[in-house]
Image (cartoon, rainbow, N blue to C red; front, top):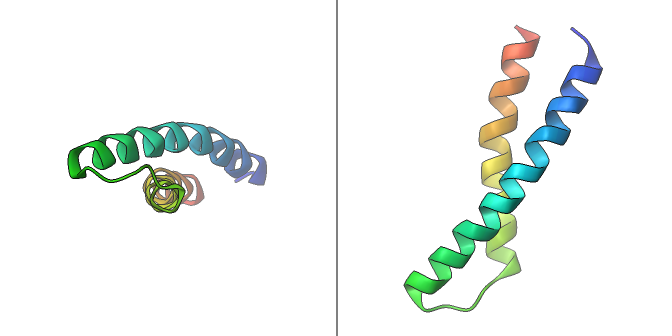
Length: 62
């Protein structure tokens, strides 16, 4: 296993969850009539990053 693989996967898994987190929060805020919140976006981002990155690392290190 190469650690560069993990770094490349981390880089790939960083951009898509960020875009998804912004859209998730925008739709959530619109539905609940709440203002846009960076705190909620960071929560969505952490959640989506963990869901995409952890399984990738587990598959590589297997």
